[in-house]
Amino acid sequence: MNLGQSLFAIGALILLSLNIMSVNTRILRTDEVALNSKIGVLATSIGTSIIEDASKLPFDEKTQHAALSDKNLLTPSPFVIENPGVYDDFDDYNGYTKTDTVFTIPFKAICSVDYVNATNPDKAVANQTWHKKLTVKITTPFSQDTIKLSTIYSYWFFR
Image 1 (cartoon, rainbow, N blue to C red):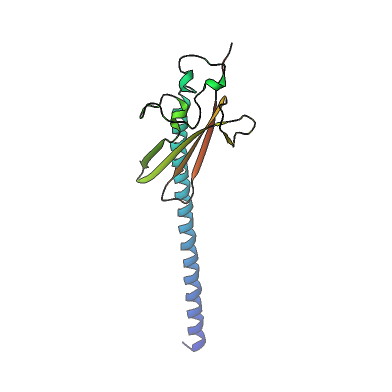
Image 2 (cartoon, one colour):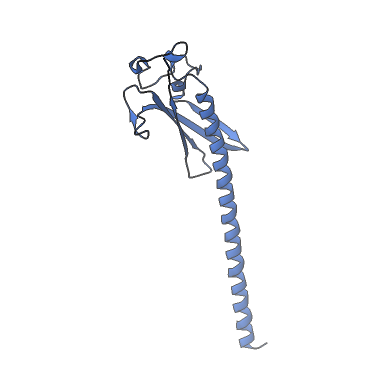
């Protein structure tokens, strides 16, 4: 084998090595995207479960047994749980945290509840309204993303 053939063989091996490294990088990135997607689905499921549990409860401590027609009679914010460990109305989920492990992946959910206006539900207000917003943020050390879910719960009364 002469020098030209040796250089050609070395060049071919270098190209083959670069191609193999490129394929391996793509495979690793695909696996990373798939894992992040699975983590996102699990986090969304945990957040949705918390929202469903909170939405089953009465709007306010003061609306559990009787209807109210004056919003000033509702519990003022900031919300605190009336009976520690007992979640008996929607705003008790303010400050609620849940740590869960699914398939060895630890998740932490942190909740907040605020009054909001119907015209601008993204901004919390200090006064009582007929609308409360529950925001759930779910994090995990295996993902850089924080999943944020929210729902608005409104109180309706009929005369």
